[in-house]
Every structure is written in structure tokens, then in C-alpha cells.
Image 1: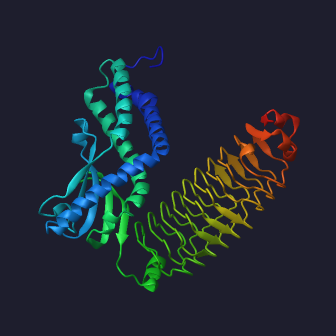
Image 2: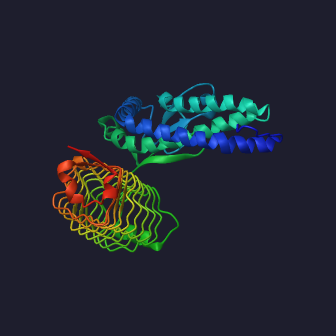
Image 3: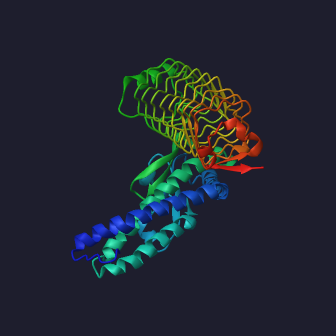
Length: 429
């Protein structure tokens, strides 16, 4: 606690403890978990897929023996009381249509997430020691609530990780071989409490015309809809809320999604020509391997979006926000990226040549192997950028802002920097 601070009321102590310690420590824990997942995503995903494969083998064996019917639900759930007893396992269980009410033999395995709860143990241990300084004003019940709050934060991080990992798991032959209901959901969360879909499969035959009318009707929420391989072209979906939906392979040409909230939705290999995404909310969406033509993404929010290997042709991304998104190996042709924000964006091996980037911001952007040749970079801002890692032949530089950049000595003249700006440059010979 701050020197000289006297806390006499319990309510004051709790408020101080939360503001000065719990909240900052939560932010630190979440940041550390995110970094760990990013640094170890490959091995964590492999372990997740192998665990899922084990479950599928068990399900199939029980189905062959007549002890299990078609699968409608697979759940990953934690029991908070078990976690308090130092268990670090989620229970992975398969059900039929009756879900928790299903009778008969259980089909379940465990999924160990000790790597995740190591962060919670550290978080809680440090706060527990600090709580002692409050001279009895922070009691065991208070610390129990701190721990439970930490569990929820850990579960959210696991949820985000598994939403990506499950995409690999469902590709396995073991999953494909299962007898499944037409609609199957895989969910993660608290046992018999709040849980969220991480994957949904819906093989029911759908009528494109009826689905289009349904979407245009303007219901409150269309989230978790599986809308694959449909003709939804020419639709007016302005302002729609459609989170975690799957539009893979569907024709969305000439449709209007202006102001739509499409968080975590999938558009892989959709036909996107003449689509209006103006001011749409597209964080954590997946456009990988997709061609986007003649489309308007002005002021769209694309934080943490997956756009790897996507092609943008005659698109307008003026003032779009591509924070921490993956655009590796993507291609832009005849596109406007004026005032676009590339904050910590992955543009490795991207072809950005010949496009208009006037007023754009590149902040800690990964540009290894990228090509910005013949691009208009007038007024563009470069912060913490390594110019030695990408091509910018014949690019136009003027009125740029630079901070902490690295440039080869032979290329320095191209940037037209002032003496003051040169102080921000590390020159590589």
C-alpha cells in the first residue's frame, strides 16, 4: 500500500485493494496468458486436437457397441469446486439431443489446462500475500471471490483459444467418422452454468430464398447461424447482429452489411463482390483465402481478424482499423487504404504494391517480405518499423511522420526525412 495511507473502514479497504491491486493484476495476468498462447499456439493446438481425437475414438467405440446414439452436443466444462481442490481439468463430454437430461452411460474424458491455471495460481498467490497487509479487513471470503473472478478470466482466454483450435480438431478423421445429429454444438464454460458455442455444425438442407428473407426481416439476433454455400446475394442486411455465424462459400455479392455487427463470423471463400461493409464491426472474423472485389470496408473495425492469403481487388478500406489482424500473404490491387490503421498488424509477405496509403498508420507492423513498391505513402506515419525487411521501390514518400524506424543507409534518401526526423532513424550499413 502507498506509504502513509491509513485505511480504517472495511469498505475502504476492499475498494483500495480492488483498484490498486486486483484490477492491475488481472490486466497483467490476461496479457501474460495471451502472450503464452501466441508463443505456444502450435503445441497447445496439437495437444487440444489430440485430446479431441481421444474423445472421438471413445464415442465411436460406444456407438459401435450400441451404447451411444447420435451426438448433438460436446461440452468442455469446469467445476469451480473441483478447481478449488487443485484440479486443473475440464470435463469433455458427449451427449445426444437431450443434453444434460440424457440418461444412460456417460461418455467423457478430461482435458488438462494446468498451463492456464499456472497464471491464476501466481495471480492469486501474490494477491493473497498483499491482502495480509490490510490487517484483517480482507478476509478469506473476499479472497475466494478474487479467485473465482480469476477463474472466469481464465475461462474467457481458454474460450478464445479453443475457438481457433477446434477448427483444426473437427478436420480429423475421427470426428468425421462419428454418427452425428444434423445440428451439433461444441460448447465451453461452467458445468451446468454459462457456456458458449465454440463450434456449430448444421447439415440441414436450407432454402437460400427463405434464409435471405429471414435475414432481411430484421430479427434481434442471428448469432451462431450456419449459413454455408447459400445464395444470399443482393440482400439488405444493414445493421444486422450476426455474431459467430458461418457464411463460408456463400454468395454475398451486392449485399448491404452497413453498420452490421459480425463479430467472429466466418467468410472463408465466400463470394464477396460489391459488398457494403461500411462501418461494420468485424473483429475476429475469418476472411482467409477469400477474394474481396469492389467492396466498401471504409471505417470497418477488423481487430484480430484473419485475412491471411485474402485478395482485395478495387476495394476501399479508408479509415479501416486493422488492429493485430493477420494479413500475411494477402494481396491488394487498385485499392484505397487511406488513413487505414495497421496497428501491430501482420503483413508478412503481403503484396501492397501500387496502392494508395495516404495518411495510413503503420505501428509495430510486421512487414517482413512485404512489397510496398510504387505505393503512395504520402502523409503516412511509421512507428517502430523496420524498413530493412520489405521492398518499397519507387514508393512515394512526403510529409511522413516517423518514430523509431530502421533503414538501410542506401535507402535513406528515399524517405525525404528532415534533420529532426533523422534522429528517429537507426541507419543500417
